[in-house]
Image (tube, one colour):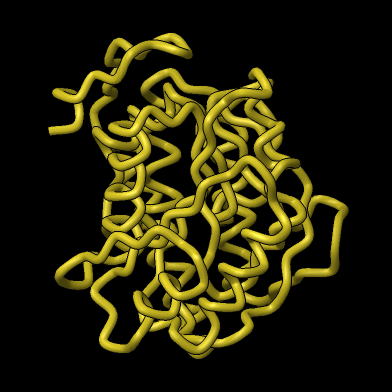
Length: 252
């Protein structure tokens, strides 16, 4: 990947007005050579205005699509505007902007790069059924990807041009679709993945995606999401070489 590669950070946000301004300002002041798009996922608060005031470009969805729907909209924007790389970044401050270039560097080895917790960096931890689910997912995906993966549910991940196109064609909005289903579909389409160790911070505010009291339900639903992902038909579509011109018809 050349130094001139155009890179877009995609930040899905739903009712994150309390923290998104600080998150955007930190990213823009810390990371050079990366454009930022906030996808306001039908928020009922002032998320869009706060992100715009902080300096981000903002795409406003008319209603809530979920993380997967918001990210797919962001990847379509990245594809149609000719970005070579895109990286998903949380609006709640968990993903440290200083590690964005480390995750992007993984694209020198694979189509998708995952910023992984539980890989020897930082002290982020989970326990109980949630941890069991993560371990099961990691074991299955490591086998499919033929490389060791420890953090399949991390939302801190980057995509090259081939992966961006794949995501415009299939990026499910269902539960865990933005992590489990999208990655399995990409692997079954022939894309490759690598993980990069990162440290993550606790949420700085906003509304969490998962309640701790639903940890046991998370385990069951994770297994179900994995089953759905593995039973989808393989979609080995022709993928472009890096630097190819946009195929706008592919995003319809």
